[in-house]
Image (tube, rainbow, N blue to C red; front, side, top):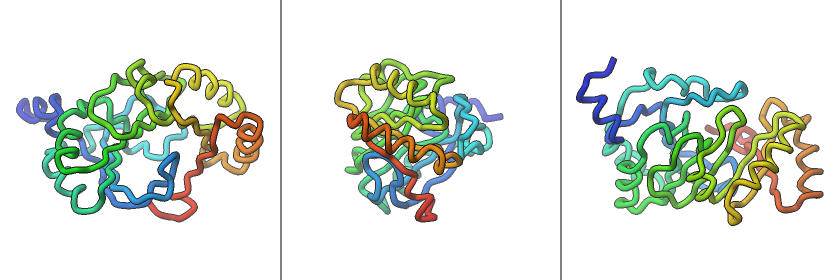
Length: 210
């Protein structure tokens, strides 16, 4: 149970439940292959059954950490900082992103879009989930739509999401890791027949890096 003072700091985004932070290579989507510092914020209620970071779901397991320390750590490593989760938009991202921008960082987010958009972003990667659909603010501002393909029906979901996202968003289909042998050939065929889409792979897993 957090003290009232700490809870107030969390509520306004001055402290956040930090799960982990690490410097690595972006493995997915538009910025694949580029160096970035990842900040993983705890807390998610979207509940994807194939989530590979289920330990992020319970925010209470991850200590509230001051954003000044988070920004200080990030600024030592990379010009590009990626905020991920969990679901980072469960929390107010305004103060964290403001401080990162003051430190001249490029600030990206990876989100399901299930909560209204807060924060100032150079790149918004929207990865929508069926059980908790994105809010209009994220659809309207996403730079990238990345749909995870777990089964054949997900292609229908992908097209539904492409209709909702803004017209400038770059469209990606990515096989769910445990189904990659089965789904990757289907994605390749689909993209060749529907070239508005691009293929995304979890290249960091092939490279065996975080």
